[in-house]
Length: 151
Image 1: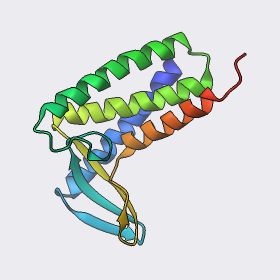
Image 2 (image 1 turned 90 degrees about the horizontal axis):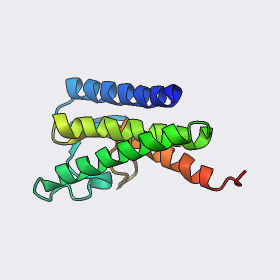
Image 3 (image 1 turned 30 degrees about the vertical axis):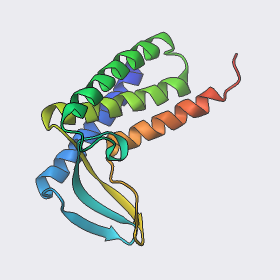
């Protein structure tokens, strides 16, 4: 159980540290072009993935925070119960770390700091952060694990 929680903790530390660096160097709306496909930015996301419900009037902060807390409890239970299932628990650990990282932002700032912005010509992917990346990779691993043959 400890190694899975350590992975989650590592995701949280990297996520919060990178957000801290962005907040120290950038003001809201700043964009620094790195290359033709990638910019560092500072955006604030009050909604969920892809700014879902970002302009809903404030209730969404508590809604998404509640969902995150429930997910954290369920994921912790699943890691404890299936701690020997490596791929499954790795996916859960990444999702857990990402959920906690973004939940911390919601409670302390009222929004989530996003700073990674990929694009091709005039087509932009919504900005995201390390926590979002960990959640996506974790969900991918959970999907991959679901295709394993049962023992």
